[in-house]
Length: 470
Image 1 (spheres, rainbow, N blue to C red):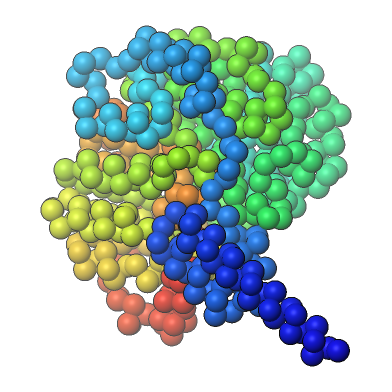
Image 2: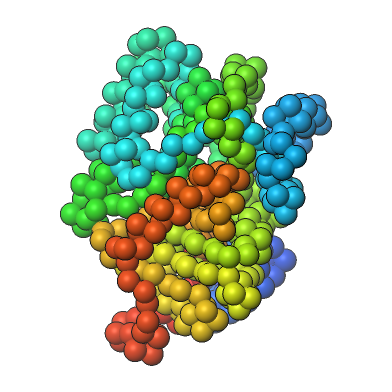
């Protein structure tokens, strides 16, 4: 009897493995992803079939962006974009490709304050929340019930007591450990917080692979924040496991805030069905700095591989330098080839990654790529004073970017992300100086994989097999 049961289970697993293999062939966004899943499913169906149920989805069907699917809103954005268009010589024409990728216009009249590390970030953030008079829109991948998380909660509750409307979103995977009591306390105080366990969107089961990795705060439609920092004590360098936490956030003013607000409104509408457009302030004044900027919001609902295309377009545009800071380096084949091509044509390519590992598999997988890019002339720099988590890139002295996108397949194709691209020489110089300072606390990788410790030599090739999922 038991033999018959096991035989039936085996046959079912093989059938599902074949069905899922065909699905992977049709839907995976890269050939490497298709091959990886097919080999895994056919060779080890006992393990692969259950894992595919959780991690095998490649596109987030049904996600609707208002700017793409509503002709009226599209026309309004075009009109708004023309009203805030950069001057004729403010942005090089080669950067117009980013408007196609983002489906949004580059806009002038912005300013940015770089917020380096947790103290600067949360000091500016809490001050902005305390000065809100109309509303606060807040979205984070991770919120923890620790000292920093409770401090944020107190500021949000204080805002509601002043009559400020607070709408808050958290990710169901990133904030899975956030106690229900934390959420309940915010709701009781009047904060409109979305409990991800009770609404549509990526949750914790068969859509585990899709995560909203965005970190957005908008105050009264006039001030906006985004960058690498979540809400937890470690992001202020208070966790001895990670040590000093190196990260970059940014505070924005000007029309770019309306783009941050638009993407928040789209996410809110998708989760709740509520249209916020008529309840928000869209009249943003130009700032004296007059920086040109663009928000590139990417995700698995996009028709194109917008995350990867954003990085590819930035690297291709470089004439002198491309500097990239990312906690993870697991590039797809397109980005890998583009980086090598840039180095071969004489562009200074520097990639700054942490020496410390917070997630072992992507950390190990990166070593499988280092030799290849170094041989082409790229420089790998490993940050050694604590953990580096910033997501920043710099192209020549013209373009810099700060946001939530890591240099890995997960950020390119599986997560919802945001990056603010800034087309401004003064800002690029500030980002250059910031990264140059980071490089003084890093060392250049010289040892090839063959000379690394045994754990890395053996683990890196194996970890690379999982790169389509990382």
